[in-house]
Length: 334
Ligand SMILES: [Zn+2]
Image 1 (tube, rainbow, N blue to C red):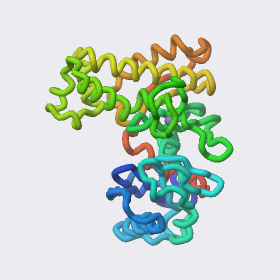
Image 2: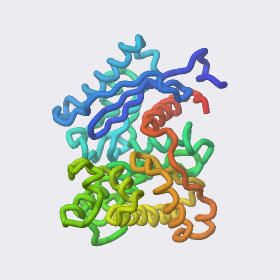
Image 3: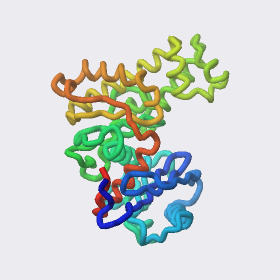
């Protein structure tokens, strides 16, 4: 096995995944192993000026608990569920953590820690992680979907992350699939996310029950409307519940035709489906494959593999560390 460049042991980076609810932090080695991990509630209520301090405190905590000094670390990557301007390392939009918006977080954390720090969209990190050690190993052209509360995507072209001119590429969740459709979290009507994200699916299920549709959905959720999740809806669909079957079929169809469009634009060798919703597995995979086969251009459809992600919730943390190693010239173990 190859080791990190010039080191007897593997080199290490800290990767942070800032979610709407929790911030996960991991110490990752250049072999892609998560050596240690931590989790803390994300800070929604602190002033914007305190956000860099929150990140710095977490990193220092990890170093202390791991008995490491900053100089023993290659760098830090902070993964954000939002849009980042790569030119200024600034968070432009982060709907789940609005107090983090406008922060030139990369530079501020780098200055405070004296360590190379990168800021990256979480879905881009997931794509890098899956390509490094997950489903996309050795695949140079792929698009990785993170199907969660929203729909995030990372695009890899010629073995490199495709970022576009400002770093904002890959907003496939905001492809407009119905010009007059329901409002999306971005403010636009009719984005893919407003039809096929977990938030949308759960919303459709609650609406159907409130309108009095005959369904086992409420029963599956233990009688609590607020306890309905995508898992509940997919479970009810598997058991033959017509309301849940219609909701999941619609969501999968919007997802499938959007993936067909993505296949037509990028001609990827692989589409990876990850995120919480992808846990429905074959229930999503089989119909999506079928829709793409029918709706994408034939040559392109014939040469794209559509698969499930392999790294689960760790894809982003592993991909963030990969980015640190690559940026800093550390040879990673492929
Ligand atoms: Zn949108």
